[in-house]
Amino acid sequence: MLRTPADGTRLRILAWLGEPDTAGRGLTADDVAARLGVPRTAALAHLRLLTSLGLLRLTGQDDDPRYHRDEIRLAEVTQLFEKGW
Image 1 (spheres, one colour):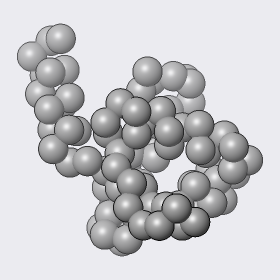
Image 2 (cartoon, rainbow, N blue to C red):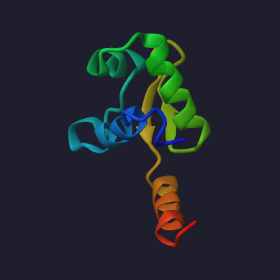
Image 3 (spheres, rainbow, N blue to C red):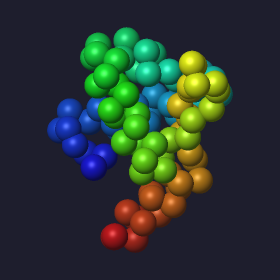
Image 4 (cartoon, one colour):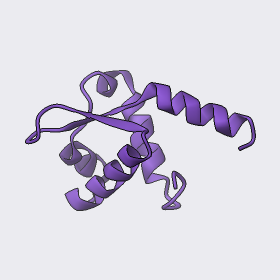
């Protein structure tokens, strides 16, 4: 699921959220849409999938949700792949 679509959009979102300047504040769907040059609905689809996989968590209020990486879950998934899962 992370490698689809082939252009690596979800991996880029995860990488961007790991950068020091964005890790603390998180990103909105509008931030992601602007950075990727895609419609907000496309950005939301990627963010919702990553959230449903447990790789992102939401903070903020309903009118301004922000997405953050879940570092614990990412470490767990990384460990699974390193073991050859």
